[in-house]
Length: 195
Image (cartoon, rainbow, N blue to C red):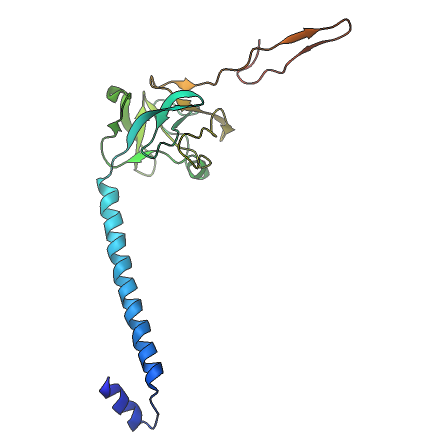
């Protein structure tokens, strides 16, 4: 520090102690943040390579369904065939695939024999259950939400997954018919198609 002051004095500049102190503090903080960021990135990368997906059961408004380790609903995509995902690019942004780095873990009530993986086009391993590739939904912000149930998006319907590995289709109310002397009205029928 004395060398810096001496050099600046030799060049005819006056050293202000406050400016020099401020500069040193800023440089020290920048270096410290850089080291902390480097260590955090390395730690996250190491933990990501050691993690594997956990699939469990949770009671929701749809009954018992599969959920991930954060208790977020897991969905299947009706367009997927033969255990291969048909959801990529923008589809995968709204319906993130359940990825794993190792063999997935079966939580309480989940049949370990039905758990598996499939390789996505980018090379990642996606968790499957009863040969269905599994996804979460971007708009399920809290545990137990089922906002993706029966949504028609990216060419097919999305359904929560039961403990048996089948689509959970929410029971529809029974259509009611009201007859009067002049009119008959029936409540509209939703998916699946009515007879």
